[in-house]
Length: 364
Image (tube, rainbow, N blue to C red; front, side):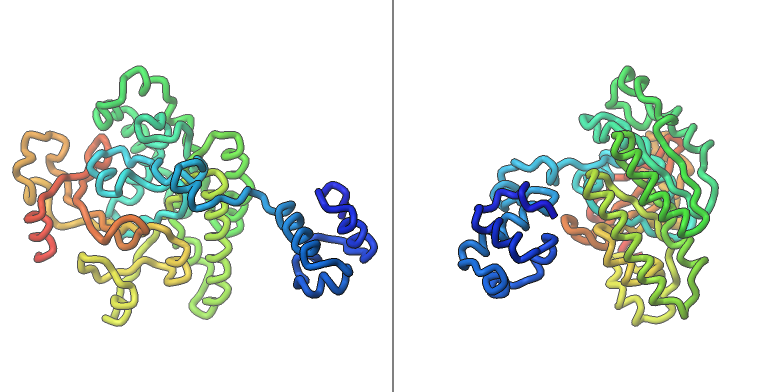
């Protein structure tokens, strides 16, 4: 350790060299009293040494609560969100998805999880003025092949879904060229992708969204019930890696999760599962839940949009579409609530419902 580059008092520097301390770790692992005895320094000098050493290994400067309150730390900006590409869904989620943290999208098959993720991959490419982040997305597939034909259809109909965006702005974005697709067939491939390849794209400013579809598939395939401890360790490692990516590059991480049937009431109580009664729980248990910042549950109902909302007959986009629900299970800034949405030809669209219509859903 080169102690000369630290701004230490000459007497403190001499004492450290005389004691043959080789690293900052040795300094920080000893108590103040131990350092006084070892270095033969006063309490004030030891405190000076500890502060200088701690500051030298801190990667980011300390931030006070006052600085956060006054908005003097743009890297900690909590007002900027990633739009879902629909004003009703954005309003439901208080502006969209936060830039830091893991958002989980759980639900049964055909609930619309992949459709929402593809729409996010397009929304992130818009300028910040229109709810995007001005960059591309990485889409990691662990189960099925990426639905490229559906993506092309969504791209061709963006002018219908996002009429508020000027045509020249929309034409300037090469949507298809900014989505990087990765197929991960095992955990080793997934870890290589999130720890090696994605950071390169992020450091170059090419990517501001990561979608993992799905997080449960590989863990269900590679681990049996007896491997619960090893499985939990891998889940924690993956979660830590994704959190590091998100916080380092201010990038939302969206993880699709499968669901499992709750065979008894105790599991439902354990899940503390929202306001809509469901007999399913997200897969991977509490170990994975502790990694998630926002958990959204999507489901498909047995009704069509016109069955529940006949007043929407003037909106051609909804005709024949199945009514779906999106529920906030937990989030730091949103209370448990739900909204309706449907999947149209041009994308995912939220449906504005009044209190009476929502109450009738709770009672059915």
